[in-house]
Image (cartoon, each protein chain N blue to C red):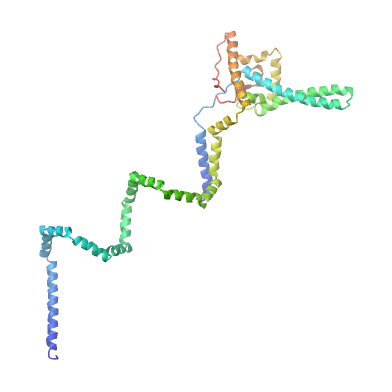
Length: 174
Length: 217
């Protein structure tokens, strides 16, 4: 057998040995650690801080620019309306993109938690992420009563989680 | 002188006849059963043993040894053995009989090999040999071939991805902010558990069966 034919076989053997060393086939999959109200609130607060800091920075930049420019009187109201829409898009986009891609916002990442589907270890789709954001807003309207099920549900799900079919789990090994 | 020629010729002829008859007689005697019996008895006799013992105790052996050396008997015998097929046959038979395996097992099991290796490793010659080997082009070539092998990089990749190495890197790169975040995570999870216990107690519900929390950050 030539050296060229020998090498892939040696590589396969090395890979098999490495798999055997690092992966225990008999080990059961780790149980998810569902995250509670305090942890999720801190992560959400951090995300709100990020969103608002960016929004404030952009608002300041636009305000400075508009103060230099000689805008007509009606334009100021238009800028405020555009700013409101932009803030809404930015906020919604922030959560939808993070939840539907990695399942983690920056706040979630700092707290080592992740949003995923309740029935599968995969991130939510973009549409379901958007729905979760809507449900989250609805859950906050009645004096945050929609979040109380987190304290009692076995999987620590809030109303928005139940409606969107999501759970929040930890990323640290159990 | 001419007159003596027939006499000389007759004498020579007679001598040859006597010589032939004598040799024939000796051959007949040597081939006879009686001669064999006599030889056996002589060899088995105490006289021969005594004579042999005296000969071996005396200077005869030394003399024989000197003569063997002087006439290069050993060298000639060795040359004869090496040039013939006898040596090949002997080697072949030894190999078939498993002599090499037994000898190797004996050497590997015995303390001699260990002693030899220890002595060799402690010797100055070995140090010089190692030094020359390291300085030689052989090591450079070996290193170059090793770096070109895919197996090495598979091993390196596996080591780099091993939990021990990643944990070590994580520990090294963890800064103050990470330590603060770890503290926040730990306390927030404890607060989760405490808040849920309090809520369930208030509503008189049994405590939830949740996975154990991780340890100190």
